[in-house]
Image 1 (tube, rainbow, N blue to C red):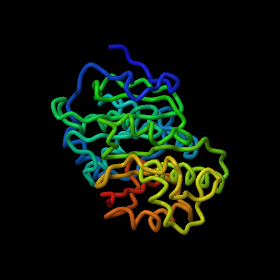
Image 2: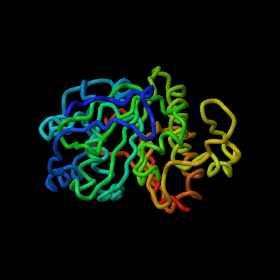
Image 3: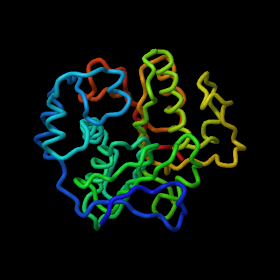
Length: 288
């Protein structure tokens, strides 16, 4: 099967071209997860495929996570960040439908597909990125597809149409990161903007109509319940993960999301570079 990316120009809800590899490999050994829990935060390293954060954190020698990613066939060390989240929160279960926003270079696609279980369990993984992302040949199968599009202006109803039976997703992951400038406040603001877009895609504009926040999306006004594309793509009971850079605005996310989810948490994965300011906001069980 050839591996390709779905270009937005060819998009139609009924005619998507699946992108996948030929086989599903075994999940990460439990011994590796045991090692992962014991390790301290890793030093910086170059060229591992992580986006945005590399520029913010600088470069250094390859570490445990880099070597293990190569040994186990992951395209980037960022796989271990999602592995830790999965081990702690059990976000993805057999047959889940997963949306990965900012999916390049594909490590989270690999981890998500692994946790769907055997092909007979069904499920799907959809990745969206500005870049054309080739689905990795290892740890992925025909349930994985990618779409080349800008999440910031990709209509939610079209994103939802990518889900099984167009019913929405049970998990939404956002590893989106802006092109960094090196200016702390600017980079944090851009990161928060992307995080708010991920939240709005997941829960919809109408769900955010209650918020009284200084955070705005894309520099525009706060969402209105009357917006034509106001429904989110995350199913009730579903989970949401958003990457952010530490800032005052990032702390505002918990206040915004607490009324919408059963539980919210912050996590700084062990695989995060020591000089990085990235953190992950985990939202569990969307309330109906």
